[in-house]
Image (cartoon, rainbow, N blue to C red; front, side, top):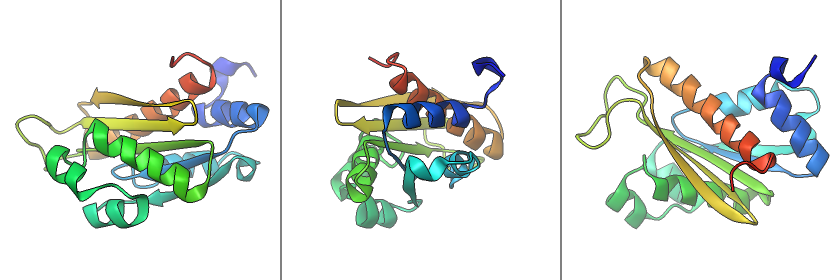
Length: 164
């Protein structure tokens, strides 16, 4: 089996193992989809420490240290919030990498500046922090699955040195 045939969660698992790095997740709209995929890989307990499912503002603040000011100024679905989430979960679980997601999965929740399908991913590591923005056009489950794929892709890009 070559790399093109492997699922993203398998590829990132191999890289995390090879590099002796640990991962934690802070998921909002993806509702644990990323954690589910990662823990489907045998041996994932070697690199996956855990995750926080922080859906409401209160959970983001209390569990991940996201500031109320950030949430009120930028909203949950923003670069600023996913960065605070990624940094927060990385510190909370003492991991090398923190990965976070927020989105407007739909069908409701849209605003004039953030339509349904808007999603953000944050990644925090010792050598920096990054965000990526997406606009998907699927139904609720499709948007969540697409963002989970995008998050694993961002992690893979970081681990392969393509993010810099």
